[in-house]
Structure formats: structure tokens, C-alpha cells
Image 1 (cartoon, one colour):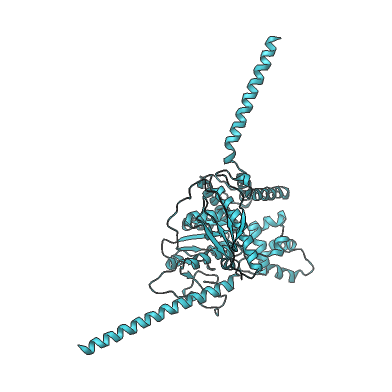
Image 2: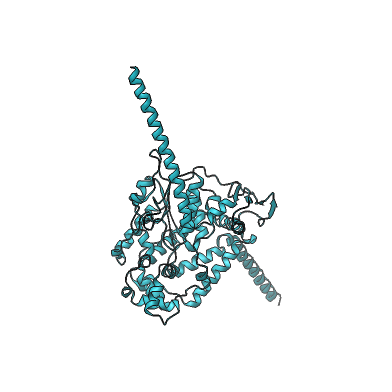
Length: 483
């Protein structure tokens, strides 16, 4: 009996020690396996991509090998996990690098102050990159990003590559279906260079570098083709075209399903068929050429400093901020060009429709999977403080967006401002109602204002040059007479 008691006691002791060890391991590992990691790896598995550093991309040649369609039940689980994680990004409990209270707002002389903790020194970054091209990919949240670049260029008094005239067809394009055309862009003083390019134009390394210089940075963006295609189909009139042929069918998903069974019978529609890769410069003749697709992707990998991902929008912005050495203020935004009705009633594709879409926009899927995979690798390399900055940015973004919407209701007429105090991630800065107006301006009116501003600046420079030349000419003539 004593021996039995001793054995039981010994087993219990071992069990207790083993349990304690497991708990310690889980506790130590928690910072490295946060919920964002769950989302990243779950969604990476959904697209059959790896987040490892030595990923061999383009190894899958056929449709069945390259793509694994998940069941609608699993997709629903993925979306619910993503929503839960996104929500928890904004809670205090998720902050794992430094202690911080939720922003406290108080009004002082028509201004709002947000206090943030500073338990860690502000990261140093002294030389911002001011020669940047952003490839404005159609229907991929690119209008919102474009606004960021336009605001940065305008506030820092940089030269933006802008359309030459509102009278030219599709005036907001620097090249319609082609790369930048010099005849379509604005003039700048001859002793200056262009700094920012962010209007629509097909990417071409040489053409972009000729304007911005060989050492400029290229930034792009891609979006999940499952959501990109329905959005483009709605925006560019494909759904309307199908409805004319099948007027008795009202359901949008059913109409797209019919289209994807025989897409060639509907003719060609720009920005629908591998629209993203077309913007990145892949010619139509290579849409199903595996070797050409892979080569183009590998070239783009070398030519772009960053390709953002719409589904990881804030994460992409923080990575861009770090790469370009910009400030938190520089990347703040208010979402633009969003169809609210479509957002409330999204088009949900069936599994068969998804399979046909994968065949139809195969090049876009390859492009998206590659650069989503790469973005996850870049995030992984940033270290554990990356998501702390993302969470901080989300908090500031919520406050600034709320302030801007309040300013919008008052027609940006008041003199109120919001002050974000210095934190681990930023120096103190102010956002006023006029900056909100810029962030919330539609693309075309904003472009027209900037074009007028740039034209005035160029004309003033030209007049000063003419006056200078006339003065020198008069002095030259006077000297000749005296001599």
C-alpha cells in the first residue's frame, strides 16, 4: 500500500511538472503566435502559398495543382476569423510591445488632443524617399493610395506627374492602355525633376525611370481576384452587358457565372480580363503563357520595392511607411471610391464560378498569390513590433476618420484641428479640416485643382525666366553701345 501511494504521488508530481512546462512554453510563445498569425497562415493555405523564406514560387503548372478550392463553410470560417482579428487589433489587450491607454479625446480651443504613451524611443528615419512611382491598379483600392501620394507630393512641394489638360480624352490617364506618354503630362521647370507618379498608366520600367530617375522606388498594389473581378465587372459595365442578353436574370452571381462559361462570346472589356496584370505590363498575348507569366513576375519582383495587398491594407501602408521613411501622418487616409450598396450586398461566387474565374484570370491569380506571399515574408522579416505599429496606426486612423467626417458635415468650414501627440511611432502632428478635405476629395476634382496649381507654378517660372533673359539682353546691348 505505501508503495502504491508513492507511485501515485510520483505520477502526480510528474504530471504537474509536465503541465507546468507546457503552460510555460505556451506563455513564452504567445507573442509570436498572435491571432494575426492565424489569419496569415490560414489564408495562405487557402491560396496554396507558403510564408517561408525559401518558397519556390511558380512550381505548380496546372490548374488542379495550382489551386485548391475550399468549401463555402471553410470560407465562412476564414471570414469570421478575419473579422474577429481585425476587431481585436483595436483593443488595448492586443498591445504586446508597450503599455498604452486607448486614445483620450478632449476639446481645447476648437482642437482635439490625443495622448499616447512613449515608453520606447521613437524609431529614427532621417531620409524620406521623395522619388516614387505608385502603379494605380484598377479596382484595387488604388484611388485611396493615390490620394496619399498626391497629398504627400503637394504638402512637401514636390513635382507630381500630372495630366497636361482636362480636354484630352480620359484626361486622368497618363497613358490609356499604354505606359506614360510625355505628350499627356504637365510641364515643370527645366532645372527640376519629377518626384511622384501615381496616375493611371501601364507599368514600364524604362518609361517610369526616365521621368523619376533610375533610383526611384516603385510601389504597386494587388487585390484578391475573387473580389476584384466582381468589382471590375460592376464598375466597367460587364454586368450591364450580360443583363442586356439575359434580361430575365436578375441575380448578379448567376450573370457572372453565365459569362465565365463562355467569356469570349461577350467580346473584350478593358480591365476585366487579367486586368491587374495588364496594369503591371503583361501583354494580352501572354495571358496563358506560363513561361512569360513567370518571367514577368520575376522581373517585377526586382523592379518593385513593395507590392501592397488590398486585403492587408493597413499592414501594407505601415510597410510602405518604413520602406519610404515617411511619417505616420503621411499615410493617413479616408477610404475613397467605394460603392456602399455593393459593399452591403457583395456578390458571392459559387465554387463552379470560382473555378471558371481561375481559368479566365489565371495570370491575375498567379500575380496575386506571388506578391501576397512576398508581402507576408516582408512582414515576417520586420519583427514582432510590426503589428504593434499597425494597431497603433489603426487607432489613430479611427480618430482621424471620425474627425474628418465631422468636418465634412460642417463643409470643412470650421477651424477645428486634431492633434496627435508624439508616440513610439510618430512625432506630434496636427490634422486640420482642410487636410481632411484633401483626403476626402474625389479623384477628378482633386486632379483638376492640382493641375491648375502646377500650371500656375510653371507659368510663373517661365515668366521669371523671360524677364531674366530680357534683362540680360538689355544689359548686353548697353555694354555693346558703351564699348
